[in-house]
Image 1 (cartoon, rainbow, N blue to C red):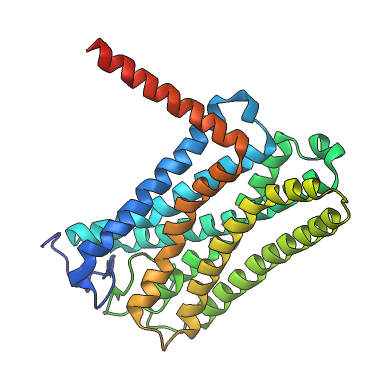
Image 2 (cartoon, rainbow, N blue to C red; image 1 turned 90 degrees about the horizontal axis):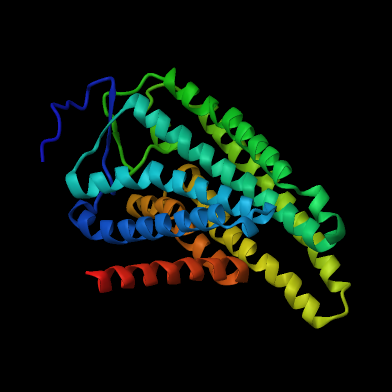
Length: 323
């Protein structure tokens, strides 16, 4: 399908190829992509709607859930719609500025996602290890301030990536073998030396994300120590249940993100289609699964969602009867 009067040598354009070698299966691949995306949007918007409507949920923990939902909506919407345009309509053209913007947004959201997970671990630590001071240590205002610090940190550390790439000369071959503009996928299109880009990207991924992961491990180590000191088994179970959802989110988010980063640098033996599909899992699975996990494990949130679901069903039933 002809989309634009496009030549691969236009210096203002890149060309995203989708999944090389699986072009004939793009339509079939788009089915799980679109399903995961829609389910993720519905789940995260439901969390935002219910928490926003219910005054009883205006607490630090639910404010963090809203932050996570907003980030997951942003990170998936930044990448998945463009991938679906490639799969469905063969719309592979993307401007250089659009490509660098997409790269900046999804890397910033990824780092912000990591920051929110750290704040959530600290929230659980205070709730379990120092419950009497929880209301004074972690107010909604404090959570908002911590979220703002996480956003500023993400912007400051990620901004050099597109700035460095914008100064690079790109070769005549402007085909990016990917469904989105990942930092290393774009950097490999350069005709110049990209050692600085590689090094800085690796430092950001491992130093910043590694630091976040270490803080989370320390928080849960202290939580575990506090829980083991509790004599009541029922109290054990209650304390651990409050952490289950957060631990699941980490197990889904960190391995997929770090694995994708490593594959670009050290995964030369892995087939490109496998690499690209694995990279896309980060934008599909966490946004889809996290609202479900929190909804299942959080009784208060689950009850509020059920209340609004029943109310909607009753309203629709009344409308049908009126007709």
